[in-house]
Image (cartoon, rainbow, N blue to C red):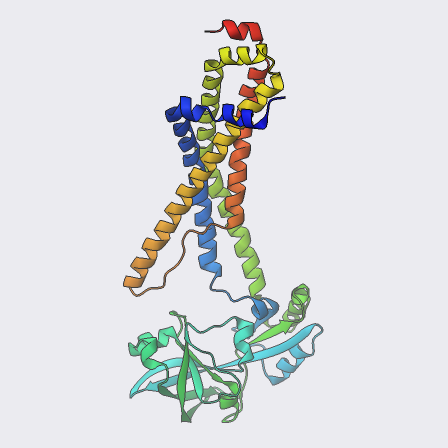
Length: 398
């Protein structure tokens, strides 16, 4: 049996005898691997860009209950209590929303004023882009959406800590009258929520309920005790005529969609990988022809067919693995370079940086192992053929 050190020395001899061809083959495999790494990395990046805005934890255990547009039923205090008394429901947080006017330093604009308890933020997955969210003990604070800043042409640093006031319009359930309610208090801006599409503000629900009777809630967050009970609780709420959505289902659907996208991108990259594998197979076949006489000599002096096969397989696995390492380096380096340039451009334009390409460690490990396996499979036929050569015919080969 040939020593491992001898096998490795013979398998790596191609780097000394045919360095140009060997490295070109490795780089050819690297190009195919890099194509797969970059395309799949793009898929993971797009998935991350979408899902990183979602706050998990309590938000994944909550149902978003909405008053239907027809308002055949509305969420009132009695409904909130009913939701809370449902089996497997841990907590409920309502949101009261009213058309209002916001005034800041003499400027006035239209806004949706939302009254919530602090726990609503956790259940809805709402976080502050700048500053902080208020808690239930802080009744003098307000949190604004970033769209409000555009209304006043302000930056977060210029408005956090400043005071704003509100005039609210309260609908009457018994008729179509609208009651105008001036809230005789100024609130300190504590935080900014990243939302460029909607102009709204959050204040403590107690600040509204202490001034007037809340006719109904626009929505409520129902937190269940375990994710397994989301469907059953949702069905019970739907029976009452309300609309229900769940963040967990949205995340699951998004993950399924992106899994399909990643598979499609990997298939496109696989085309380049197949071409690289064909090139490697051709190299190993040529190597076999060039070393036929050498194989005959090795067989004559006692080398077994298994020794010959192991030598060729070691060579092909090594080339495949090195090709994978090169491909990973090119793919990751290219993706991170694009991320770096995009972040620079986004920062200069006043936007938020993002990672368009992402490369999970487990995926890169899989690619490295896969490239070695590909090298093994590519070398199977040449190694089998080399091991089956007749020693006398091989020695006479020229």
